[in-house]
Length: 104
Image 1: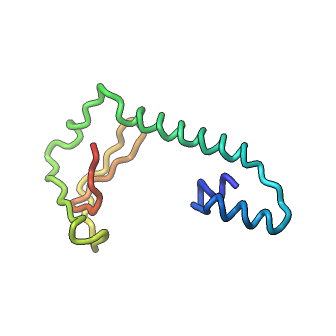
Image 2 (image 1 turned 30 degrees about the vertical axis):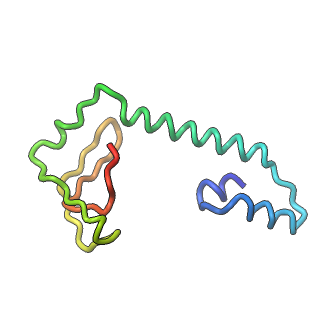
Image 3 (image 1 turned 60 degrees about the horizontal axis):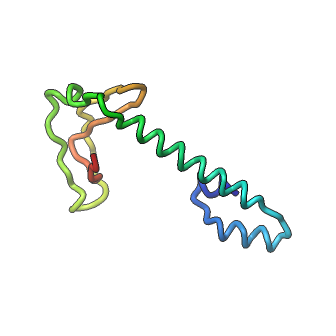
């Protein structure tokens, strides 16, 4: 149940309904625990990724500003990779254009 929800985005309610139709009993409490654990892991990973004290600006020196094209559409052809950086084991790709709006 959790893998269907977490990996494939399959709705919990639909999983429950299909299971009931086939007489299958689900461990919904276990699924909820797994969901909470996954949320906590995600929160911690985000905290670790953006922990203070890491100066990421040094990696961006000499790179032109990325053009935001999100108002025109959500995709575009032929993105140009400006730089590939490895920061604390995380790979960062910087392109010339993006439809994604940065939050941080």
